[in-house]
Image (cartoon, rainbow, N blue to C red; front, side, top):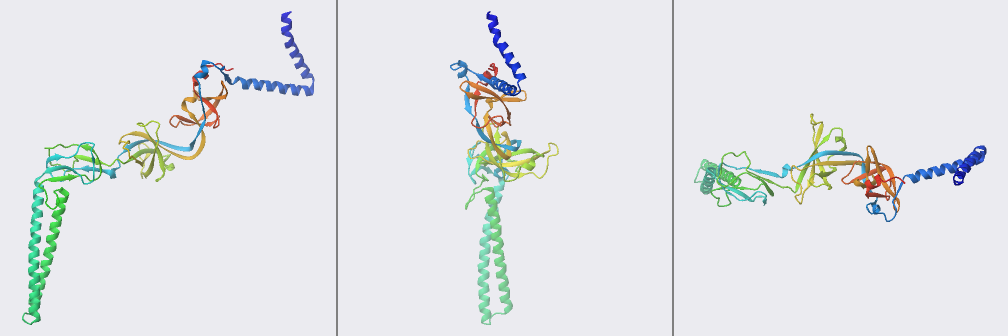
Length: 395
């Protein structure tokens, strides 16, 4: 008897369906209701439900979907920090000699013109001797000029009183011109010797007997390969390098099919391995005129401000340059569940209710992933506990 009662509803349902088949208008209404019920069941089947108070619910963190600007076209290329060569000074000895003192240490900040080291050199004695001789030559030339001026004045006076022939006056004028030219030459020779003294750093008004090598620019001592007591006769090899690192270069090799997207004066984003998750702005200063035939790339050089000295030459990273940006939803990378080529998010549809939503995602930007289709800004998605949701049965 109990079995018969259990079967009655099913038999009644079959009878109703049969009636619906025989009735024209009724069949349409009932068929629509059946489709609605099926649709509701399908929609309901995509929802994962976790009972209130379940310990599993506490393992799931939900955050609202934010937005970010994403490029329609983007250039990404490897980059490297380099010196700005216009801000680097390589210091070599101006004369052969023995190093007396090294006045700075590796890493020291220096000002432009600051003494770096002193050198005892025979060339210093020769330059000082030349300078002293040129000074003596000036004194002699001035005495000769004074005598020539006096002789010329006397000759003119005698000529005016008809006591001297005109040819004597012309001779005096010639002597005066030669005396003036001699003084000019002596002063030029002295100035030349003075410049040698300045170049060698031999001092001011009273030159020192040793050479002082000075910093060519303000910056830091980044290389030092000399010690006191060493004798150097190779003036072509630098013994010290001073660099101003307040601005550095970011050099990148951009593929030839993307170089059209970058222009001088535009800004690029810089990401460095040393500073994960951080982005820095640099400005393109130069694009090479030639293509590297082996790599099929073009060198791009951008200028990066470095006031805190965080960026060091030879650091590696990449540059990123975007075109035609649009605003799209973004979610934390950990919120996206990937299964092969498919990506899904778990969108909160109510307390303890989550819907698995297939989405189309773009390239990750740090720890954020742009979502190009499937959700909208403001939706709430699971960011922690995603694997827990993936392992649950769909209810």
